Amino acid sequence: MGARKEILSPVRRVVVKVGSGVLTGKNGLNTRIINNLTADICELKQEGKEIILVSSGAIASGLKKIGAGERPKSISKQQAIAAIGQSRLMMAYERAFARHGQKVAQILITRDDLNHRERYLNARNTIFTLLSWNVVPIINENDTVVVDEIKFGDNDNLSAMVTSLTEALLLISLTDIDGLFDKDPRTHKDARIIKVVERVTREVLRYGNSIPGFLGRGGMASKIKAAQKVTLGGVPMIIANGSKKHILKRIFQGEEEGTLFLPRDISICSRKQWIAFTRSLRGAIVIDEGAARAILKGGKSLLPSGIREVRGRFGVGDSVLLLDKGENKLAIGMVNYQSGDIKKIMGCRTSEIESRLGFKQEDEVIHRDNLVVIEDLEGGEELCQLTA
Figure 1: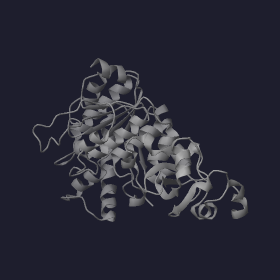
Figure 2 (figure 1 turned 60 degrees about the vertical axis):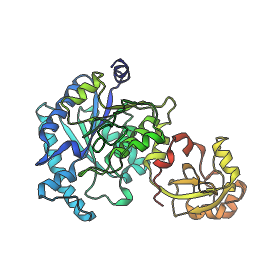
Figure 3 (figure 1 turned 90 degrees about the vertical axis):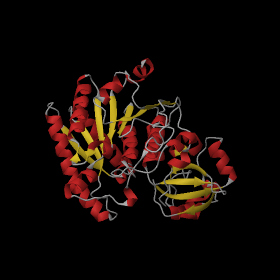
Figure 4 (figure 1 turned 45 degrees about the horizontal axis):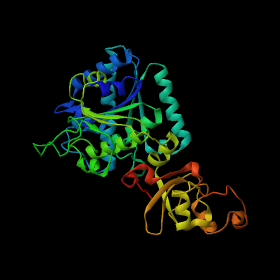
């Protein structure tokens, strides 16, 4: 208990993610759970905590409202159900928080909102303003308009991005089981809960069951990947059972609830987290051995001379994946030139850029400050989501 309390006591800003399996019951939204969570959140706020809530439940609530037996496969039907469910979800939160005199605000976002640095910063400033006004932000993916190209994938991924976005010092993921087990406890009676994860390794990733629940999209595997992202940013994460009464209070009292993922000693900065984990990858660049060595061992930028192939169509400022000739994933970076222009200058010296293009943006195709080496991410290949 002492070790947990030591880690959690300095935490002021917290992201709390609540899954569909926690929020919904047989007859729709589980108001008992919502009332318990809001009571805990309001009490923690009185102790000086800033709480940002990432809430699933819109589609699950909508399904219950219209009496549907399962999640439809059609995007338009999912969006319509989300539209029905989101208003019910927010109404339930409004009523629950109002009992404590607490105001809330709804924020619906897509991955595209966080792909662009300006919109990313606008979202960040909006959340900070709400916190300064003592309002609890309630964030969800905008399922009513989202399409595959701009999906977060699940709210576990979204909660990790919000943690980085808001510089929160803790992520708590509330689910319908007690934490991370070495086996699926639903099918193995001898499954053992893992109380502390010092580092997310491939073995830990294997513990996760990627099969989502009936109402959710994620599963334990997506929670582990969220933990991998936030701990790389120097932030601890706890996966715990959200159906337990006063679970948030018990966590902050230092009780060993759920699974604690310890933060990495050496973390990557928020800008590089944004490049590596938040932005969609728009294409790929294949580089030669010299360029790979310069980037991986020498900490250098990517120059046109080291480029051998350009894949996909992308613009200035987009994120791309760097590959070697053996198709190994080396790094993720933001480009200074569009794909068509890179094809014209690949293999040439920096002094030749202007003569080939008629202009010159930068010497570097990707500057070192905008490069994230995948080796540094530990299991980064599992985190890359190539959309090109």
